[in-house]
Each structure stands twice: as C-alpha cells, then as structure tokens.
Image (tube, rainbow, N blue to C red; front, top):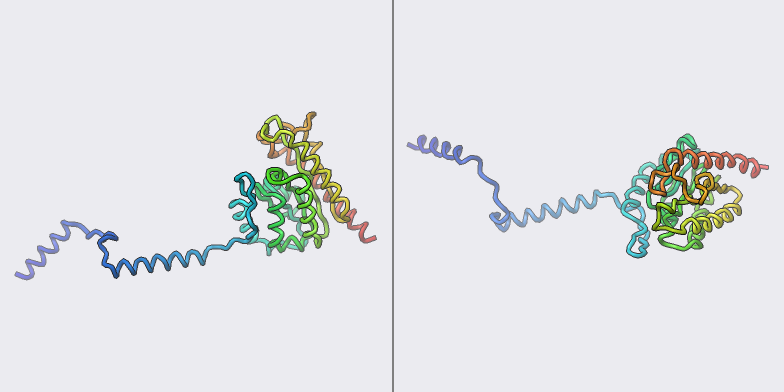
Length: 270
C-alpha cells in the first residue's frame, strides 16, 4: 500500500513539473537577511576590484560643459597600463583628437600615440602628474589647444603651455605644433576662431623660441585655403578633423621639425 502511494506521488510530481523557485516575498525573514548580506558582499568585492581613477584633478565646467570627461579618464587609464613599457628612445605624441587620428609611427618609427579626443591644455597638465614615461623619453610632440577656446582666453592657453613645457623640462627634445585652422564656412558656430588661433600660435612660437631644446612647427599655411580656412581637401567634412591627405601634410611638417632636434642636440654639444 505504501509503495503504491509513493508511486502515485512521484507520478503527480512529474505531471506538475519542477517546483518553481520562491519569490522574494515568500522567503523567510532569516533567508531574506542572508540574501541581503550576500548581495552586499558581492557589491563590496566588485567595488574593490574595479580600477581606481588615475587622475583626481577637479573637473572644470563652463556653461555646463565638463572639461575633464569620462572618456578622458577612461583613455588615461588605458594609457597608464602600458606607460611603464615605454622605452627611453621613444617619442610621445600628446594631444587631442587630431593626435589621436594621426599615424604617429608614420612620422617617427616606434612613436607612441597618447592622443585623447576632446583634451585641453588643462587635461594635459593633469596627465603629466601621472605619466612616468613623459619624464624619460627621447622627445615629446605636443598638439593641443583647440578645445581650450571653450574654456579660457588666448592668454590663459599660452600660460598653460608654459606650465606644460616646464613640467617636461627633463625631456631632451620638445616639439610644439601650432593649433591648426578650422573651416569657418562649415564651423559657423565658431566664427572668428582662426583669429584667436593665430593669436595663440604667436604666443606659442615666442614661448618655444625661449627654450633651447624646443621646436615650433606651424603647418597651418600648408593646410589653409585662400581665405585662411582649413581647406576642404584636407578635412573629413566637419571642418576640423584631418583626412588622410591632411594628416600627410601635417605629419610631414612635424617630421621636418623633429629632424631639427638633431641640429639642436649638436649645437648643445658644441
């Protein structure tokens, strides 16, 4: 009789299917407490395992725009993962999206691209606080400043550049690229920006000329049309970012500037 009853119970369970898991509302108070403790422990472990932010510089905000963006912080963390691997004989390219979109190894074999889209002189100053390779490499190429116009004056941009060059004082050779012109016919939101760019470039040229191991390179004239705008044939269509041909022209100017490093080194030796 007992065996028949057990067989009937098993048959009944198979017909009902597997038992459904209990909902949170059906858990006993003790089980609910244990569940909460487990979730807290998992969250705490995840937070401790997450990478910490490298740069803790305060974000500068103008008209609701954050200067230090989450993208900047994320890219900087990536850069810091290989920073200890950069050798002394290498050249660093530091800058914004124009650097990020440039084939730096086409200019200098073995060069390292540290471009971050949207970066500013303020952001570069933050990076230099944690960039170990920036103090030991053979040379550094700087190309940043276009995004600064949303946050500061021409005078303040040049002042930030001075601080950057001071921070790179141990580097054997420096190259500062002029801020390149925009196509104001497309970038109607930034009319007269090229006048401001020219003003900053004059300050950068003067600043660099006072440093014996610094070369200033201005490829703006080679990239501009008859009106001083970035020529159509050199940008991707947005009036700002260079296409392959634009990068070729800009890269050639930087390459020629880097060749002058050797002249500077020989002059210093004499």
